[in-house]
Picture 1 (tube, rainbow, N blue to C red):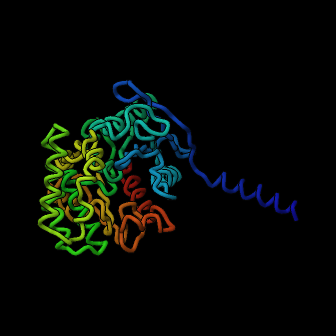
Picture 2: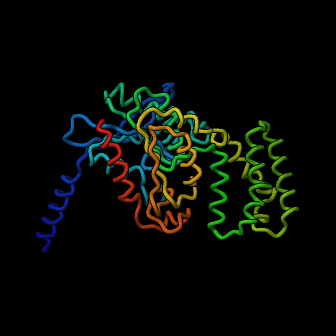
Picture 3: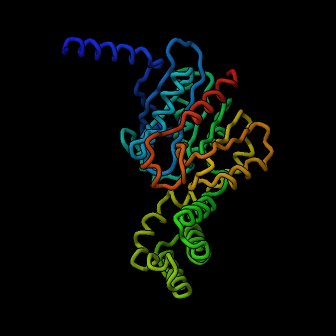
Amino acid sequence: MKKYLSIFIILAFFINAHSQGFTEKEVEFWDLTESFKLSGTLTTPNGLSKFPVAVLISGSGQTDRDATIGKHKLFKSLAEYLSNNGIGVLRYDDRGGYKSGGPKTSKSTTQELALDAQAAVNYLKTKLKFKKIGIIGHSEGGGLAPLVASKVKKTAFVVSLAGPALSGKKVLIRQNIDIYENMGVPKEHVEHFIVSFFEPMLSEVVKNVDSTQKAQTIDQLAAKYKDQYKGESFVLGVTASNTPILMKQLNSKWYISFLQYDPISYWAKLKCPTLALNGSLDQQVEVNSNLSAIENLKNKHIKTQILHMHNHLFQVAKTGGLQEYFQLKDGISDQTLTTIKEYILNLKL
């Protein structure tokens, strides 16, 4: 029995090894200033001499090359699927984390993160001599993809996965409304929180450079809000003792630049084939307001598409809630993968 079991294991390994239609290797490349190196994984399809290649740009936060969230690895799944279907992919660890050098993402602006993606494109073009190079970004990365494309000559394509078209400030306000209302917080309570505290707080973060003055103003906003809306859902959480915790995030270089970054002008300038793909249940980048902003540009190069019952991570979902990400068994959906693959391959690059 053991003999047959061993044969079965060897046979299973042999079949699995030959079903993988791509080659994977670890790579390193310099950032544009040549101050530090970024580490990534390049997957290329087997048996092809010419094929398009995509650089993946991650969402906000210190993200690894696989875009790991819980048990799901969005970028790893996407890269392996695309490379099994004739498309090369370069994914890399965000600067300042895992195997990549440089300052952490929290100490970098959104524009500096976009420069890293540009460096990845340059590496593929100059060092590895690839000709047809496109960009696929998720979440914040989807909003940075048009910026990167504006800096790179002859970008082959852009695919934005839940990428914002509105400013970071508007995205965060809409995000908080959607998340809290879907949690069952009364709509009136959410509105009072946003209008009387959250939105003014974000405005203060952007306009005031002095940290002490910023903290004092936030304390004043909190006191006024609590006094005006006693007993409402958010009042207990808005306290002066929480200000230092808030300030640690609000004062970060990344957070301030994210609030100010308005990608719509870069969406307007896109001249390469572009797919803006969003999930109908997305609670982090609300689909209607962001896709409407893109569609109103009437840019002939951009195609928009909504995937029904998909969340921010492009999982098939029921609610789209953030906690549901970790409860769902499956990661990025087959429909998402097929849609991206067919869009790129149909361009006949």
